[in-house]
Image 1 (cartoon, helix red, strand yellow):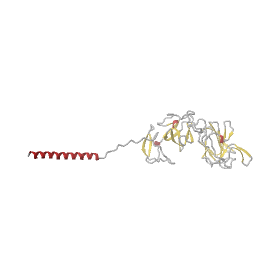
Image 2 (cartoon, one colour):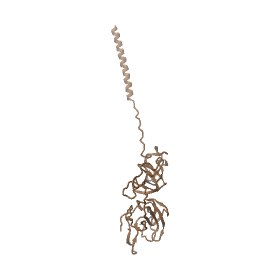
Image 3 (cartoon, one colour):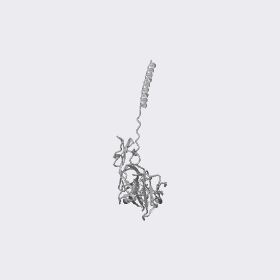
Image 4 (tube, one colour):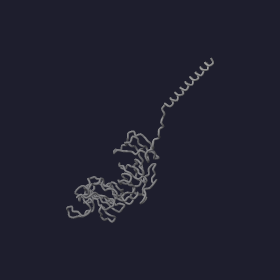
Length: 322
């Protein structure tokens, strides 16, 4: 009888332990089977400077879904664009801080397409390395950030472009390769766009009125073609002559002077400083000594003697087509 009672007790204990173990196993399975949240990673900061580089179409519309708002300390924060257009918050205003002129280029150390004077204002679109991408007079270009003062980016900080003076880049042997041009180096093309050929070269020629000496180069461009300053300098004369029509003369910092004539209009005045690549006139067919629309371009040296423009460092011309 005692043995039967002991068996019943042991059986009850075994059943109890079995039920308890099954419940614990079920709880463990429920805990491991639940979903777990994955911690979100922090969003990487924007590109150097103030974030996303704005991509604009020809109409100035931002094509990025998200744009970067510029705070007062120059640090960007992501904001959603409502209508896709750029606002003042998307850019910075910079002030040129340089002793001479600052070149505008097509890219970092790219082709010179213009220039800026000290204290001029520019709209900064983005920062790419040591360069600011800017918008000036409706056109995009690049300028060296060392010579620009902007919120969050004070001027003359970091490494100054080295060698050949405080405002110049490493020497490459290419005229106009410096960040700023303080010696009047030529680097801009006289016409924009340039023609594919020259219609009359420097030197003796016969144009039907006897042998004459042509003191310049004729570039066959349509009426209204943009004409640029070849370098940094000063406008010395604007006027009219019977043979050459409307003309403009510029003396450059390197001692050379340019003479453009047969012009439609001149957009600068006597005594005005001009920067390399600056728009100074429009071409035409004015004056008596012309048989068609073109630019007559003459160059004189520091002594006032006419020289062949092809021999002047920094100037390049297409071939003569007779």
